[in-house]
Image (tube, rainbow, N blue to C red):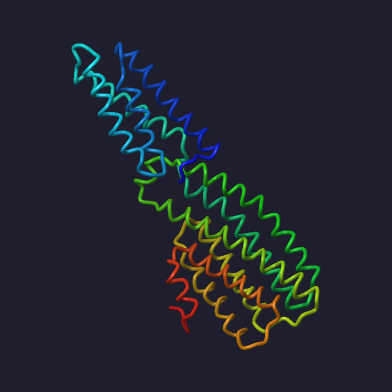
Length: 303
């Protein structure tokens, strides 16, 4: 996360921090503590450790606790260590409670549910473009292009979910589930959307509307890519390992080798190159490192 919070994140942060501070103070006062300094101090700083998507909160906690202890020692007569410890315990309980009630229980499921309609739209319309290229149907390709333009709404919903889960409860992190990996997957799928939309526009406007010859292998490449997108969607639906789509994606990328031996127009070459870029994005989305994904697409076989 950068230095600036989005408006949604800022609102969530203010709600969490404000609720933690007020509740901790109120609970400390209700328990008869005339000056419950450590309760709100612990609650406010600890909730950053629990919810912030970085480790800055841990240092804030340590800094705040040490300085709070110094302030208490200097300005409160007859300072009681046990009193401060009880206040800190109140703050910790409040922070955990607020974090638990204000963050998603299963952020990975939320991310997957937001990604699924994106992949469904991509798979259906990549297949439609492949069919249009095979049959020479510019109208069908144009319809697919406009349908892909509607992916903006799907991506906006995905971005909203990603903002929501960035402040995810520490209980999710402790569960061992790789939230960061799924966030990276969402980012790469966003890149794939851009490449596929570029591919679709050039297939429609550059190849089909001008009557250019369709390269051998291009429809097959797109059909295999659509199969890979569908498998990836199904794997995300079951929260499974994103491995099953990889052979299909690599197979789609192999068709570029077939087309290299042919004379290609600029539009046809752009269609193939954009589809190939989407394949690379999607391989990375399944968890393959960038260099490995690039290497997989250039090997004579995949195992």
